Structures are given as C-alpha cells and as structure tokens.
Amino acid sequence: MKRTLKAYAQAWPMIEPFVIARGTQTTADMVVVELSCEGATGRGEAHGVPYAGETQQTLLQDIEGVRAAIEAGADRQDLLKLLPAGGARNALDAALWDLEAKLSGIPAWRGAGLDRGNAITSAVTIGIRTLPEYDKAARALAEHPWIKIKVAQRDPIAAVRAVRAAAPKAKLVVDANQAWTVAELQTYMPALVELGVDLLEQPVKVGLDDALYGYASPIPICADESINTAADLPRLIGRYQFINIKLDKTGGLTTALQLARAAQKLGFRLMSGCMCGSSLAMAPSLVLAQLCEINDLDGPMLQVGDWPGAPACVRGLMSPPWPGFWG
Image (cartoon, rainbow, N blue to C red; front, top):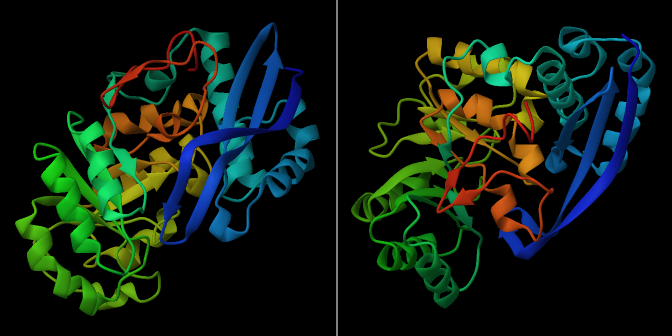
C-alpha cells in the first residue's frame, strides 16, 4: 500500500512553567506524524526523551531517514528494525496504529489483544514551587483522585505535607526525578508513610539504585528513568516494585505492550506515564493504561490548548480517544 508521510514540529505552551528536579520547560515541544493511505490518515505525536539528547530536530531527522520505507509500506514490526527506541519511532508507531484502526475498523485496544478500551483515571502533576504555591495548587486539585508531586532534594517533606493538608482525600505519588540519595530516601521515609504517600517515583539516580536492592520499602518504589525497554527489567528486580512505562522511551505502543507483559511475568506492577504533550500524544497510552494500576497521562491538562475533537478529561477521568479522535 502506497502511503504519504507528513512530519512537522508542534509546540504547545504550558499553562505555567513546569518545574522538576531536572529543569524547567515552558512549552511542550512535539513532533507530529500524519500517515495517509486509501483516504484515511493515521496520526501520532511524540516529545522524545530530552535527557537522552532528543529534540524536535533530531526526531524529524530520524523520521526523514525512514521516509522511503514507511511510504513503501513498512509495518510496525518493520519499524522496530528501522529505528531504535525513542520519540521518532513512537510518533511513527502511533500513526501506524491509528491508520490500521481506521482502515480495518478494529479499535486499537482490540487490535492490541485487550478485552477493554475504557476511560482511565490519571494523576495530575504539581511541579516544584514554593510552599504557599503547593498549597494553592493542591486546593485546586483536591477533588482529583490522584495527585503527583514533583519535589527536589531540598525539603521535600514540607512540599508533600502542604499538598496532603490541602488535598486530604487524594492518593499521592511523590516524584523526585533522581534527586535523592538512598540515605535521604530512608531519612524521609517515616514522614512519607505518615503523610499517606502511595507511590515513590525514581527517588535515586540511575546507576546508584543498586543500593535499593533488598530495601524493604513500606511505600512501593517505581522505576522511571531506570526503565526504557524490556532489556532493563532484569537489573530492576529486587530494587523496584513498579515500572513507569512511557511510549517515548519504549519507542511506541507496540514495544510498550511487550514491556508491560514481560514486566508482569517478573512480578512488577505497572504505571503508564508520559513526557508531555497533547491528547494525541496520550492516545496510544490509553491502550497501555488498560493494563496499569496507576496512570499519569496528564500532558493535556498542563498545557494551553489541544487538538480539535480531543477527548474530555474531568477531574482526572480521561475519556477514550476512540473511535473518532485516534485508534
């Protein structure tokens, strides 16, 4: 089947500067792929992995490098040989899933072998800020079932305490983005337990997390930067209880599903996550989210604007993107 490929940059302004331990961003800088065939167009959007050196320019270059193969009919399995894991493969993979669904009439969740394609509940993230601003943000989100709190090395417990006081009913994920040492984690742990934290995400640096081996954490610890593909799973055993699967890191939904199933066989619990982006970037992750206990797909909630026809998100409840928007 002859196809036409279009790829371009898209920037979504953030509602406010998004601050994490690794830095600050004011726009969600994305790459969009449109793949047309027989009157149908499949779409995908990806951010890439900035801490791995990916930018809009590198993603567009990578996509351009496989244009001929994609337009000639390469499928999702071929794509795994054409590009490594990363944002370029994610955008193309998403467009192929969407195009397949539109040409076949089979929803993407069913094509993935799942028995459901339901709405999901997503955490909403509060970035790093002053204590009064943590309180203000948490009050605005107090009715959301899940809140994710970005913290730094300095005084994280005060930030968590401010959010817990303002949102007493919410389940809490605390994400330090590698900012702590294992000793600091152990020091903070009693207070985190007292504050009713439900999940800790990547508290320590990649490569230094061997010190987590055998640590009986009273709060489950989730790997994020430490997990990219299924090849990373063996070294995480005994160190983490959850893994956060992000399509930009796995290189698309196709390999994200493979990673999810391999992780489950090893006893890991699953979280779906995102770098950032619109409802189009989140849409394939809603297939993956059907397998996950915790979901953090709040990209559209953190930015100004979204694609026309984007599915609704009300108090963290995200409507499915199918059949009209994606998949």
